[in-house]
Image 1: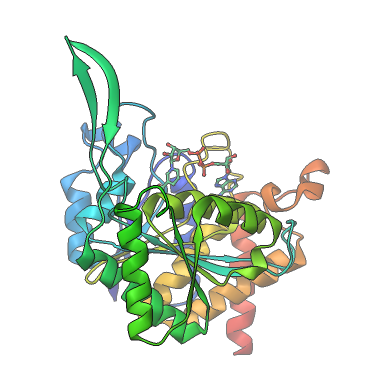
Image 2: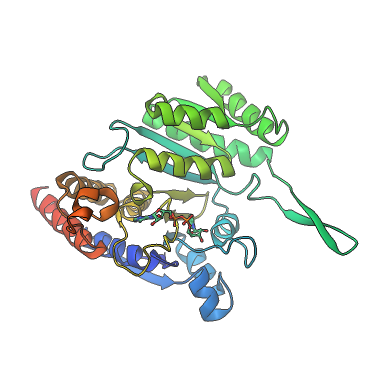
Length: 347
Ligand code: NAI
């Protein structure tokens, strides 16, 4: 039996993590889940948003399933999401953005992947207040781009794009941030050239516009940390919202699987969060640990339940919500587990 760390997170975190654990367990893959805390809940319990027990558990198990964690705005402790990526050297954040039959959205045929660099850029840099005569007169930030990290990031991008036959577009702002973003772009293009891969490039603001007009023109977007963060939410909006977009943070030694969404404070504790994004993240995790069949069954079960549209959460079925017929997190999870049972029998 394999032990995997389950970081419960904040807000809707515990609800979607428990739902996802039930789904993974239903595939029959034997996993011993080690539940640990991070974020505001951990801070309130222990005074530390990233307790040593949590770090030790990830270090031991090397694979974690993570619920979203709160980050206080404009003050308080630093983001544990950023800290976890840095501590475990998770330099590639992979987010598949795919339309699903049954999810109401603007486009029916989106199928792109966002590859977001995970540990550098502005989020990986430092920021300081500028103080004069004891008064804060401003603030400044430093962005980080290193050759070694960009090379291994783009190596992953091109390995993945070659496996999946996807055309890569490098997103940048090298017209303004000529050194930090410029180096990111240059290294990506050089590596592609060395492998005879044709890449496109696009300035991030234009990418945002083109994504809204026609996302089907893109197959894989390679972005720096902050561009990838923002475009992920934009792209989630193109395929039905944050409730359906999964993600994986991958490094050389460790991997943490988490949805693109946050703690959803507006719906936390109501039992109505969509578990899909984390369940699909768990499918990525199952592939990562060498269980591709279980991963396939989980994806098919999710697609079946969402395709049928009878027992899905309100965020993807507004009609059901208006009729007060939307499913709770638990009901949708039960339906997915039922579908896994049927699919496993048929296999
Ligand atoms: P959010 O993703 O939590 O919520 C944005 C909107 O999407 C809300 O209306 C929410 O109800 C909806 N939503 C998100 N996930 C959903 C789901 N599974 N089912 C149904 N609806 C869902 O973003 P927000 O409000 O900007 O951030 C809230 C907190 O989450 C902040 O403290 C932020 O720092 C944190 N956060 C954490 C992340 C992580 O742990 N990786 C990622 C993004 C935000």
